[in-house]
Length: 241
Image (cartoon, rainbow, N blue to C red; front, side):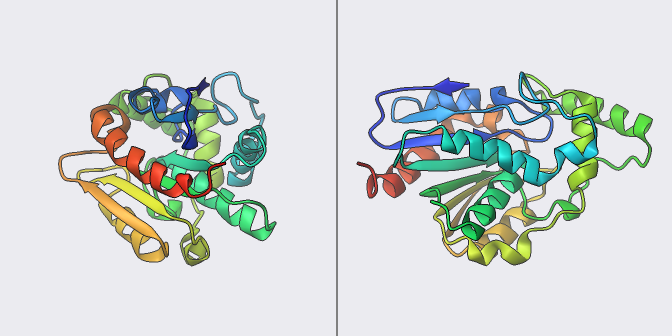
C-alpha cells in the first residue's frame, strides 16, 4: 500500500505490528500525506504477501528481507525514513543492523512507536501450547481494535520464532536520528522499553504520551502526525535532491 504525494521531503516506509497489516498505519499516513509519501507494505503472512509454511519462515531476518524489498523499490537516491509500530520496531532495528553489516545506504531517520529492542522482555502471549496460544491471539486482536488483522497461525509462528530475540546490546551501532513515541499506559510494551531504547540509541528523542496505551496509531493519530512531520522534514531535507 502506498500513499503518494508531491512531497519534496520524505518517503516513509512504515511497518506494522505482529498482528497488524499495512492498514495499521493508514490513519497516520492519511493525516500527514500532505508533506510525505508513505509506503506501508504487508510483511510476510499479512494481506497478500508471501505466506510461510512453518515457524522458520517468520524469523526476524525474513521480515528484514521483506522490508528491504520495499527499500530497494524506491527510486535511486531517494531519502527515506523507516517507521515501525510494536513488532515493527524490532524489524526496523534489525534492518538497520543488517544494512550496517553490509555497508548499505541507511535511512535518514527512524520512527519507533510502541516497540522494543528486547522481545525477550515482552509478554504479548503466555500460552505454552498451540490451542491456548491461538486463543490468546484472537483475544488480543479484539482488544487492540486492529483495522485488519493477520492470520492467527501466522501470528503464532511469528511469536514463537522471535520471542527470545534481543537487539539491545547492538543499539549503540545505530547512529541514526530516532524519534521514539510511546504511551505511558502501554500494557503490551511498557514505557520502560521506550526508556531503554532512548538510553541505548545514540541519537534518540523520546516523546511519551501520558494517557496513551499500545494502539496509539488510532487513538492519537493527529498528535503523532504533528510530531513526525517536523522530525522527518528536518532529517531528510538535508539530503533531498
